[in-house]
Structure formats: structure tokens, C-alpha cells
Amino acid sequence: MQIENMTYEDILCEAVKRLSAAGVSEADTDAWLLFSDSFALSRSEYFFKKMEHISPERAQCLDILFDRLRRREQREPVQYILGSQEFYGLSFKVTPDVLIPRLDTEVLVEEILKDGVEGKRVLDLCTGSGCIIETIAHEGRPAFCVGTDLSEAALMVAKDNAALNGTEVKLMQGDLYEALDGLEDKTFDIIVSNPPYIANRERASLMPEVIDHEPHMALFAKDDGLDFYERILREAYKYLRPEGTIWFEIGCEQGEAVTRIARENGYFQVVIIKDLAGLDRVVKIRR
Image (cartoon, rainbow, N blue to C red; front, side):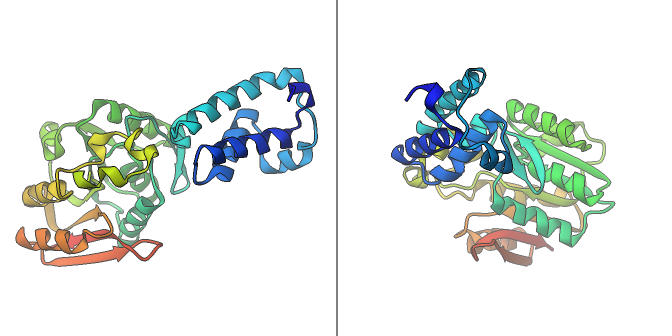
């Protein structure tokens, strides 16, 4: 089909067809996201113009779209292609150096905010893109926020996101609590983490978008997926203030195991909170 004979509707239909043929599960949604961004069209603008033919001046937009479609056909996540993802009403830059923020993690943030963060010191371990700690800083009026990560590249993304969303978060590099060595006061009212929790044995079950594109360091935690929960809880007594709380995102089958680990480390108030699909997703822990 020649460019001069293509309408906007033709192009969108072609995008859906290509992604469907490539096995993309949400071909309609992803095709629209790539199409609308490439042509800078809103839904209402598209419906007004969909029967118009593409002008030669818009050929560059078509080239951009087709390049993006080729990447999505190779199962690169649409968020990495576009470079951003919405989370809790905010826009976050994402690159292959960080996990893509997900709706499940919004449940974690929502529960922390409901519990109250105003005037509190909050520590986010394994911060990645910064979506958890920066959303808390943006929405909850905490006194002081720290995000740590072992990955320098991830912290650079988090720094960009703090600037993008106008949040004050101290970002520190290191392995869990070791990153706090430069702080005078290393104690916090809230410790939160969405750590690596996928067991190595589950690698084969992951979709190509995940296993081939998202950072493995942020996904996998040894054989059983529990390593980071054990490490965080084993040392938490040094950093958690009296009456403080620890919050985790967990895999949907890890609630019982994380509860056991918490109790083994002296934390006997454990609440499991379900996500929107009714699956165990968040753990709230206190002594």
C-alpha cells in the first residue's frame, strides 16, 4: 500500500494486524499507544481524522511508528519503546535499567499512604525507577525520604523521575542498608521494599517481555525467591524506629513464607493484603 493511499485508520489497523501476528497479547492496546504517540493524536483527534489520507509531511511519523512496531514485534515492552509509564497518576521515565512500574505496586503505595506517612521518615530499599518512594513523597507529606539501589544506572533513572515529578528524595547507592552509611540518622518510621522475589526455577514461565528485556538483577532472588525478605528483616531492627512498620510487595504465593520469616526475626504483627485480583500482594509488618 502506497503512503499517499493510506488513511489514519488504515495505519492503525495495520499496526494491530502486525502485533497480533507477532503474538502480542494486547495488540489493540499496544498498537494504539504506539500509533497515537508517533502521530501525536488523541482519541478524539483520531476519530475526527481517521478517514484522512496521510500527507507526505507526515511520512516521518509513519517511519517512527513502523520502527516502533518492529521493536514491539520482537517483544520489547511498549513502556521501554515509549520511555515512560504512568504510576499512581504520575509519569515515570523507564529504561531497561529499571523494572516497569506495575498496577500491583500501586496497591502497596495505596496501603502505605492510607496508613499515614505525614511527618515520617521513609526508606525504600531496591528503589529502581523510584516509583514507590517518589509517589509517597509526592502524595503523603513525609518528613524525609530515602531510596536505595545497588544499580547506579537505576538510580540515575530515579533521579530523573524525582526531577520530573518535583519530589525531594535522597537517592543512595549500595546493597540494601549498606547504602545508608553516609547518613547521620539511619532510623526510619517506614521501611518499604519491592525487592527481587522471582525464584530462579520460574524463569522458563516468564513472558519474553520480562525475561528478555527487564533487568534480571531486579527480578530474581536465588532459588526460592525469599532471599531479600530474609536479609531485610534480619537487619531491620537496627534501622526501624519503635512503632515503625515494614512493607513488602510479594509474589502471590509467598505470604505464608514471608510471615514465617518475619516471626523468626521477632515481628509478630503481620498482615497480608490482597491485590485487585484477590491475590496476596502486600505484607505489613510490625513488632
